[in-house]
View 1 (tube, rainbow, N blue to C red):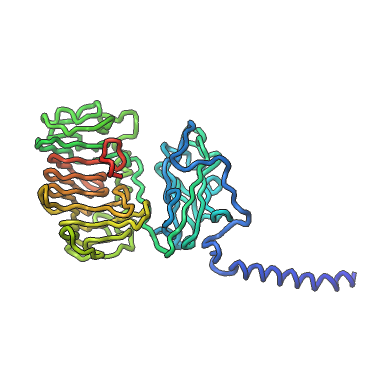
View 2 (cartoon, rainbow, N blue to C red; view 1 turned 135 degrees about the horizontal axis):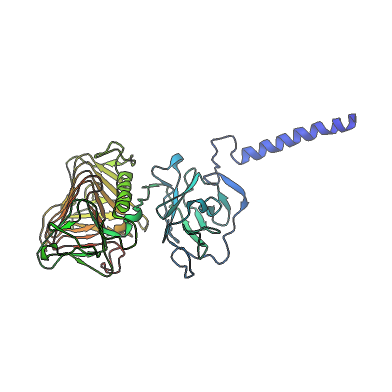
Length: 443
């Protein structure tokens, strides 16, 4: 017995020293962040499922992941996402239908170092067709990652996904934070929203809308005439805007078998508050930390002028004016080669463009991978697009939206996102980015 005790003591001390060395080497005893991986990790190497496809590539029956953020092959993803606790990064996957949230878990939605171990996420959540994995800290710069959705992920009816999904991306060489992805929920497929009716001036060519329309009570009218119950604008005093393809007007009079106008507007209001500053207006929102831009803001410059950051040139980020935003001339948004780059502009008052003409007008230019679908303009009150303006991005206006003669928009225009809001047309074109009838460059 004495001999056993004699040999056991050195073994105990050796074990303690070995454990201490391993903890020190792995960064243990700190704040729970592994310095090698940029977040908590499991010990086992992660192996993506055999036969998995990239988002949007599944041809099998069943629910599908249509898009992801970051996208597959992205070589300059940001290392973190603004607003995520601990400086973490949001990874999202968008489904083509409502899913069962209980089946979207860390076991079915995974992020790993490419060829390495899986990260332990801070959270995995689901809302309005979008699954979100948040890491507990920033990803490493200039590092490759693999994201996977697999297994028993089902829709609301219990049908399992038709494919497993895998996508790979690499972070940018320099650490940077991206704006929080804006989740439009049920409003994503709509080009126009109004809660106080629509007016269409009979200027030729007639207004065209490439996308669905949602009119919320009590504003189910067009030119003062109650719309029809068949998914159209009705008589509209003889001047109804044109809807392309299978686009419909959703209202309390017509749902087409889908979500109600109220449900769609609820998601719109939630999206609006998600990009509204914490101090508002018109109410407390959840997106802080914006870069200030000059009060009484006039953005843009004549064509050919030198690019000046914060004046006529912006890189991805969140920007705030405590008064209004008015665009004159050219305004350039540069995605720096990142197709997921997001731009969010917050205005405490109005958003709009100056009046122009066919040969000289305000326009927003998207370069180096920037997409209208990733640009958002939050107006505390109303928005007005001047004559012949070329608009890019989604406007979420607390109140009304007016489009003057010949103005066009590649981007959703949502009036009444918070209070009563009417929509006024005058020979315009509005397109949901990516819509089959939108201009090919409208993405």
